[in-house]
Image 1 (tube, protein in one colour):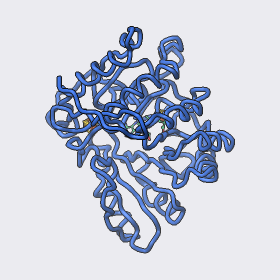
Image 2 (cartoon, protein in one colour):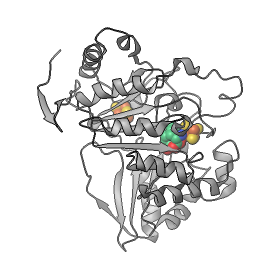
Image 3 (cartoon, helix red, strand yellow):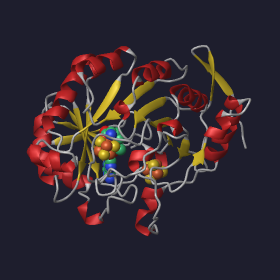
Image 4 (cartoon, rainbow, N blue to C red):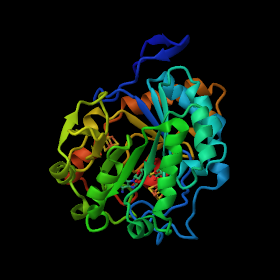
Length: 351
Ligand code: SAM
Ligand code: SF4
Ligand code: SF4
């Protein structure tokens, strides 16, 4: 196992990033704060599976904020610059604002972001998150048509609730808000142009996500994927687009701007144009498992290291061993991949 040399950032010792077996640096950490959610999106937590009898993690097994912070510190010292809070629904964790503050204060962290469905985002909470250092928020919204939204989120939550969340996030200074729309053929693909039209000129960044075969409960079918090129073609015919160069290597969304100055959109083409070759994302589940791919069927338990006398060093060695042996590139191999029955669910691993 090769050790990377130390450098100094903001007075603290920060290691050069770990590199995996394909030379990909560790750059992003996505932390799932809970496997629970207040919605039941049909493509993520179908209610037939995630019903009243579903065995979610008991609270006693969820990582505490101090433990999350201890783990995050080691990731940051190993190269992570961006920490992303997700779930399940991250806003279901009480006091998440203090976690944001403590993460922001870790030397070496450039950005703390969050992806949420927005249902529990009040104006005061958005302001607290901003005041505690959150700088970027992504809010998921799959349509403008209220009846489509209510069906897709599985619990009849109205579109007005999410639109309100977007507006309070922007008012709290979290603009531009990124809006994630998962496109599923025959379900909400008719909403592509209405969503583009609605968010054009608002400063928010609408991102179209190809429907993915994450987990195993959503009964994904390839013919339900609307390829990013089709989405771009449909939008571009009405409002011409031009590609924007990526801000950094490994950016998941390919960015475009409206030629007429109407702002920016993105496409996340994980199915038709995989971006594994630049993927530097690690994922921490709410019970402390480390996953190195969204499509993993197993993870590595970090919690025993938390109980050791020297947790920081134990965690560092564990992480270094896992990351240096990483060979994940599921999306590039999807066409040839054998079906995996026990792939981890998106709600558990953090989307
Ligand atoms: N609950 C939060 C939310 O919905 O924003 C955060 C967690 S959710 C798993 C993160 C993102 O994953 C959301 O934008 C969601 O739309 C997306 N997602 C979930 N299942 C998906 C799937 N099968 N294909 C593509 N994206 C998916
Ligand atoms: Fe919940 Fe997000 Fe999954 Fe929808 S996509 S069920 S909001 S975790
Ligand atoms: Fe990264 Fe795995 Fe997605 Fe490829 S399939 S981009 S390795 S998370």
